[in-house]
Length: 410
Image 1 (tube, one colour):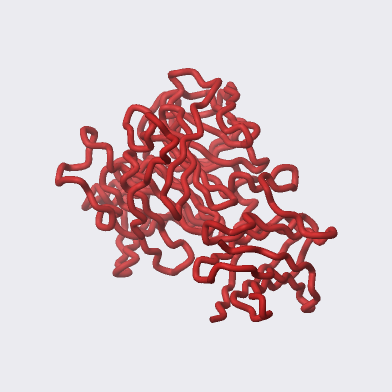
Image 2: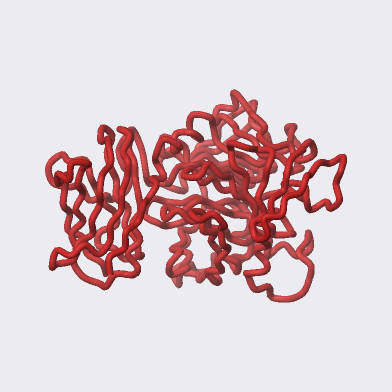
């Protein structure tokens, strides 16, 4: 069966939005504060903070996606405290650059919501994550029962928004490419046998923190206690990568985001005026602590970048380079996780067609991308295809073949 898909590149014109205008953060309005009711854009050097939503000053609308019900919300005319956009606080934030949306989960109540950056006076309520995720008991989710609290969210390479609870039992994704997003339970994370005594489920090592998506489809969890895990969303296996080096003990890791140059910025809810930076993602545990006088305490970070995706216009990781200088590369190859990322180098422009052909030459999947001269990337999902050898053919707008790469689906 041939599947025709119109894909919007995660690295399109919108891709540069967050980088040119900073990183998104959940903060208080002052240094030393711990009221996570505000979303801001911050420059990594601390030179500027622009508040997009101040929860206590919100005067706008709430839209229920399931019913299309709309109602006005303001602190002065508030029928239900849950109507405030960030409710009792937020510790999980994700940016979808394709649709210009910021997704987040409210603490304790578990509401999954989003705002469109073009209209910060309206927020959309998708639903409660706890209507989808199974809970171990009927105990209320609060300060004494924080295991189910959603504290990690990020955009994945496949375009889904992924979320994870403190205890690793609640793993879910939100379909971001449809008009009415759906929350899907993915099941409990599984510890890699090689993890030893460090489990993704253990409260004293692995709770809290944040998560970033990688170009190969993986997710990387940075726990509040400075431990790092790599998660395969398809197998749900969490592999322990080690503990961060160079971070003082009082610097709890609460936010993580990939910067435009490919480095990772880490922020803390406990410490203001400082950030931690992983300059080389090839060494994920090597961290440099930097003074940053303008930086506020933050409970979470988000950006539109993928880990191992870009550095000085090139690609991190093991992208297989096409023959000649066509500028097209793919990763991974062989395909083992149900998706392949196609990378286009800087300088390519115009509409291009991607055909995934079987050994008979029949097109089994087709996608389109509009290149804008900047490095771009799209993800093809291959889970519906049988194992075997395929050819990925890339053609320009005039149907002239740009490159053909042999790929193996395992």
